[in-house]
Image (cartoon, rainbow, N blue to C red; front, side, top):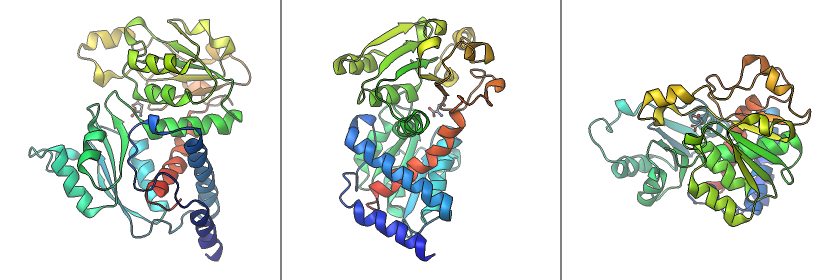
Length: 325
Ligand code: ASP
């Protein structure tokens, strides 16, 4: 007990004025290398804290409103677990159909309501820009947990944290993003975050699911090299990170189009036999058919580590915006 409080106190004392206190977390464009190093450092400490003590009382007395207008397993439960492990409490609104949203309540009014009861709001919503709208009306920090096909900044943070953990660093890596690059918000955020480092990109997708122009523009403006291809075999032998995504069924207006592209890429042992020995396979999850179960025991399979790291990174983000990291 004594030790636990000391660990938390040491963290708090070292990290006052962290640049995140009271801030919304809406986009990865808010992060530079210094901020990333800070969050990753705190996430490492959170991991040690959980491994040694399970929980702490750093956010005791604080309440998180966890507002999800779209399905979620990992993001929603890892934010909840993060808050609970730091001694805070959670108002979980995962079924908006049972809230006043069904009665026609607007997003600003829902946000005004929840901020009366909480200290920080996490929001997932199907519309691009919805988290920014929520932040506009909220006087408490708002964290974007996915705004439609827009961004998913905390996913990108946990993705990068996992790359550092698995490969020891980011600089010099060749990173392939594979699958639904058009609608996958995780690859949008991850690409925009990776431009902070000297990396090379390969964007692998069917023609109709190519990386959107606004993301390519960010890559271009940063001076990074990238190639686009439809065939994963063009790059499998020399990538360090293979980040594959689910085809986002819920974003298609024509399901026949979805059916035609949904199983375009499958990571299986045959494909893995062509990959480098020192590389990692990542996926934000949930997977549908993109990675065969036979790959799960391959030491290069890193998607379950991503999932676990999500909680540490979200602990760090919550502590940072609440001024306790
Ligand atoms: N869980 C991730 C997201 O919310 C990836 C996905 O759904 O495919 O964007």
